[in-house]
Length: 317
Ligand SMILES: NC(=O)c1ccc[n+]([C@@H]2O[C@H](COP(=O)([O-])OP(=O)(O)OC[C@H]3O[C@@H](n4cnc5c(N)ncnc54)[C@H](OP(=O)(O)O)[C@@H]3O)[C@@H](O)[C@H]2O)c1
Ligand SMILES: *[C@@H]1O[C@H](CO)[C@@H](O)[C@H](O)[C@H]1NC(C)=O
Ligand SMILES: *[C@@H]1O[C@H](CO)[C@@H](O)[C@H](O)[C@H]1NC(C)=O
Image (cartoon, rainbow, N blue to C red; front, top):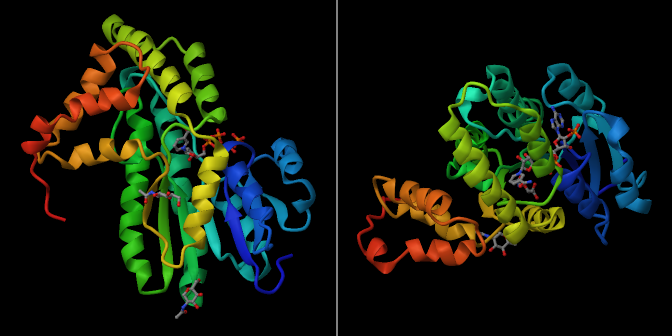
């Protein structure tokens, strides 16, 4: 149980990757400032976390079952916490989906929204009223750079993260009145099971319904670029955990944090041209005209030429 002065942190999706990285880093805090409730939908997947947590397990880290897609599971989990008191909620659970949308089932698309978007909504709905009442709390969402700009063949995943970004922008404003903060962490590629799960899914699917040309682009342009991107720019779950720890420890928590500085110009590009065509064309060239991605940053800078920038119109803030 949390001791006096410790902050109770609940994290979703801790069986692997970023969620596990954050849970371990906070539970192993030298000053023992956190009591971590690491949740996962299936406790049979707990072994890696328990091993990584070491002697923090049972002291500053405990485990609970929580499926973000189930109202009952969410309620049961939160009800089982002493006084339902959660200081920091970290919405991390998420799933990916890639492929041409004409070849993806509506059920698969709904599952992405049910987990990434409604999963976060369900958690916030359960935890936020208590935070408002206490006039204290911090809601953190692990979003993605794909919540800020769309990428070919990630349309549905990207849409689910855009939806989450919109949700948080509205909430952040409302919750200021109640001394509750909202922060979004926006990682670029991170080497976790996420990408492996996507690749396994792609290798099983035939993508019936997509034309041959689209499938050619998907398999021969998009997929190799993606693999390269993870190899050349991929961060580790520990990198994301470090940023998350800084964000929750900040006296004035930032609303957004792009964990990979290389993505700052990509996001800026979107606002550098009022019509937004510039970023669409840049991505188009990166994907189709340039072959493999060895140095994405150099390639990106090539398209961020001063000429293009001089023509920009900065939208009013
Ligand atoms: N990896 C990246 O490149 C990247 C980049 C930007 C953002 N993100 C975001 O980071 C978050 C974590 O992803 P990751 O990279 O750490 O991937 P990961 O290793 O696949 O971890 C995803 C976690 O979410 C859990 N999960 C899935 N559905 C759930 C549900 N219904 N209820 C509770 N937990 C559920 C998974 O649990 P199971 O073990 O039970 O499946 C797993 O623990 C996601 O929101 C993802 O969108 C990832
Ligand atoms: C606002 O929240 C912070 C952090 O949760 C807390 O330390 C502070 O006491 C709260 N302020 C008020 C006025 O309730
Ligand atoms: C995100 O956080 C890291 C670590 O605190 C910091 O170095 C970086 O500048 C932040 N990025 C932005 C865009 O604020």
